[in-house]
Length: 151
Image (tube, rainbow, N blue to C red; front, side, top):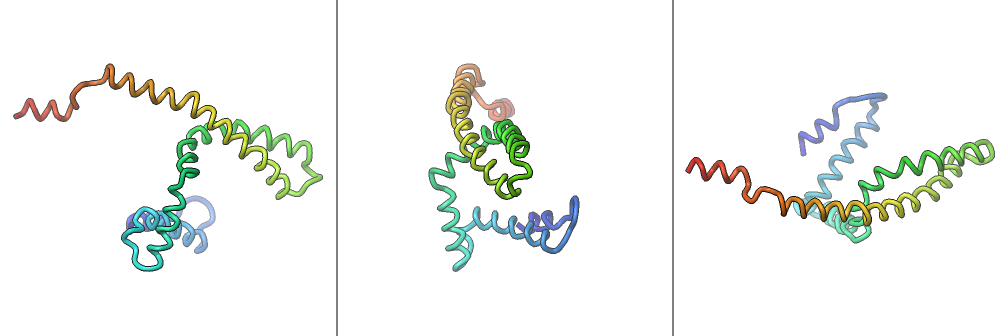
């Protein structure tokens, strides 16, 4: 953890203020706390445990499964929607309202499209990959073969 905190303290790109340093350090410490919450004493461990349990529910598991599809699809939906909202309502609506409209359209659309591609492409592709590995993969691990020869 000490190494991660030191690396997070390294200055890179743009404005480097104390506030940004503290945010980076807090993020690193927070992620370590979520992973190692069983080792934290007292209230810190209780709080980290509650957050870890919340993040391990079915919704967040599904979002983790969909994350690659979301990553691939989000820009394909975001760019045209944002361009449309800006071109149609650019000067009539405030920036926060335009942002809210774009998020309200993009978030459910990307989630739905990601679920469809995950269900119809990723899961069958994973099954096909497992079949190919089981059918045509090596029967023994290469490391074990080297050990058997030297013995």
